[in-house]
Amino acid sequence: MGDFLKLDTDKVISYGDDLIECLKNKRDLNMLRQSVDGVHMLQSSCETDFSEIKNLLEEYQTRITECKKKIDNAKSEVIADADIDSLQKEFLEELNKENKLREELRIVSDEMSNLEHQRVSIEGRKQILKKRKKEELRAQMELSMYASVTKIIPDLTNETQISGRILFSEQLMWCLKIS
Image (cartoon, rainbow, N blue to C red; front, top):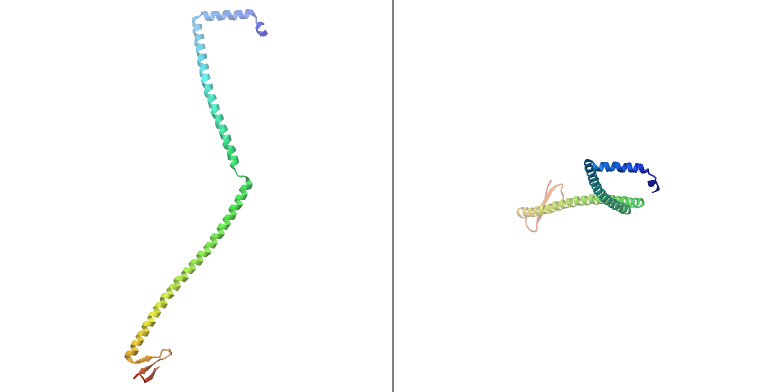
């Protein structure tokens, strides 16, 4: 305040006179009013921009805070390296177990397939045996029919020669050998 008093009074009076001369001139007064109106408009625009920028800053600050919270939550959920190594070892062990089980399953599957082939083969043999028994029964019945008609009973024990017995009566039997 002491510096203000030290101003040269002549200079202050000179500035005041210049200002009065400017205000007397209507054109200068209009320009001053326009300048004041421009300053008010500029101030209003600046205040609006300031308000918008302030709101945006608050919004961004809120977003930054939320992001920091999300980062902190994510960090707390991240598994430590030791846990990851432990889980990886456990995973590899389980993978090895799975591979062993798959190998055992393949072996069992091969055995089942082999057993199925054997079953089919046995079923085929049973069918063949059944067919042979039918054929043998039929041959026996046919042989029995031939024997009853011809009164000749073949000797089937010796396969190298054809032989049999002829029945003349029920008590007498003759042997016939054909070589």
